[in-house]
Image 1: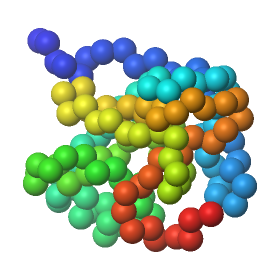
Image 2: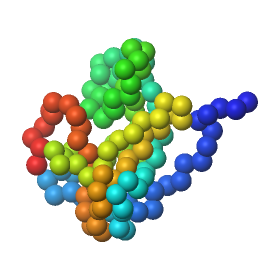
Image 3: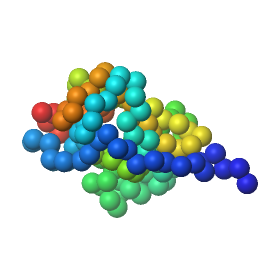
Length: 133
């Protein structure tokens, strides 16, 4: 059996999670990160419309953490693992997301050079349900 999702995911070594002033937890650079470098590859669980509706109804706080997945109507969103759920929003992001439907992963890719200690953020691309700081 040749399952395209059967591959090794290596934990990220250049990032860590710590408190972000006024935001709760956030993802920060532990080492210098170069533009276009893949910072993290996070496994994802793609949700059907029924599963996402169930999430919204029964576990509403988690529904705020689902990711857009694709334009396919049967793929309503995805829950990502690893540090994926801890990246904060920024109107001036320094990372972007790249989804891979075959491997069911979300890669976080540096949009610019990122120095040690800088927080890694992406633009959520939706109307925010909180005050961005």
